[in-house]
Length: 88
Image 1 (tube, rainbow, N blue to C red):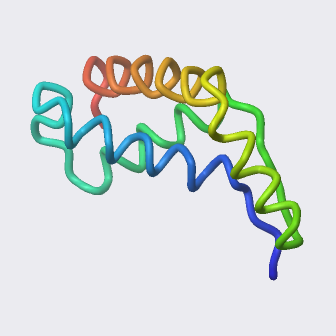
Image 2: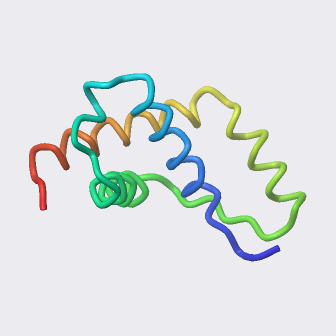
């Protein structure tokens, strides 16, 4: 296994779910915009690095906690609004 920021995968999964379930949010978001949104959110969320399979499993269990997902959704929502208001 290699060093992995678990938060990156979690943010990507939550963003995909948000865009799939709310068409208003996903309007005209190409891959570059999605990456900008993820970068904005990841810079405001704590990293969760794992190396071992045990660490990965422990982090997956923590991901199920409501607050973990809520924090990601809040930061992604802020990121979507910021990127929409300030496109590159």
